Image (cartoon, rainbow, N blue to C red; front, side, top):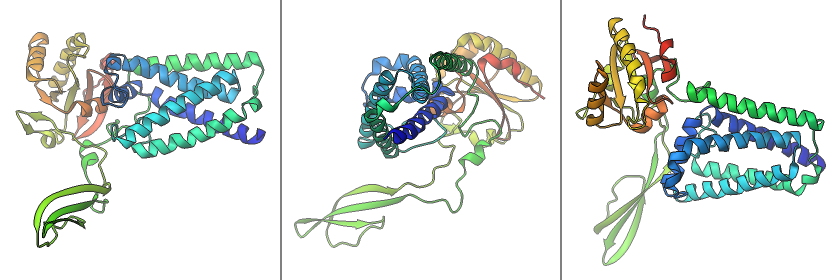
Amino acid sequence: MKYLVGVVRIFVGILFIISGFIKLNDPVGFSFKLEEYFSQGVLDLPFLTPYALAISILVVVVEVMVGVMLILGYKRKITVWTLLAMIIFFTFLTFYSAYFNKVTDCGCFGDAIKLTPWESFTKDVVLLILILIIYAGRKYITPLVKPHTVKAALMVSLLACIGYVYYVLNHLPVIDFRPYEIGKNIEEGMSVPENAPKAIFEYKWKFNVNGNEEIYITNGAYPTVDGEYIDVETKEMQAGYEPPVHDFTVEQEGEDFASSLLQEPKLVMVIAYDLRKSNLDVFKEIKSVAEKALKAGYKVIGMSASGPDQTTFLKKEYGLGFDFYFTDETTLKTIVRSNPGVLVLEKGTIKQKVHYNDLEDLKFD
């Protein structure tokens, strides 16, 4: 038992540190996921939505620190009970989300590893079993190093977490796991390979045949039945290939200009997913950046999910010399973790991407 607990303890500790670090790298993205849990009937706590970012930072720092404490063998009683409480809560959460199909991706490993709801639940069940093993053999958890060294390591870990999250909040994630990272081509990300797996559906057709309700199951073809059609139920048996970039549109007055804009040799995108939540003072500097880009021969556009009233007011208020297009809010949140943020593209390939705190880093050749 002693050796089993030792191995499991290290494994679980490393897993918590990795999972926490991935989310610590992108706390804004994790806060978006928490907003889904708060508002889509999983936790049904919409009043917590405004505090999603603060909660996300707290959760991921605790996740990393608990993993470090477990490996170091510090405060084993508090550590094990915290682990147990966390995994029981998240196992319930992922089961509820999967069973009722509330949130399609748990966000456990951010954008680095995408898990389906049932995969997330299975992962949590395995973790629950491992943590129960640790709980049963908690007396075998002993400090790996001397007490003062343990405390020093914990303090360094905590300060590293705080410093790292402060940096990524004021700039951008150090590691970009999304399909809009620098160097990626958006149009290529939307393409579907010729031999990509297609979705498979099962259809249950209901007919009234001689006064009796009968069901005919097919893979899509309308059955030849001598009866009166009543209804059909469709069930996806196997998901098809979904390209990394989807739901990417750049619209004005209902027309999508994405294809033509992604062919522009010099394009600057000013992205603000929600102008009500944007740092509006930054648009004074964005005006200067846009003017510099226009002089260098770039086409400059704004992209937002806000309505025309807000974008028109913004243009007038700050004297912006470019038009705004409508794009889905979730897509804009995925593209850049800054509101506003700026991208520089060359025929659809992302060459530069910056937080509004780093606008001076933009270069227009």
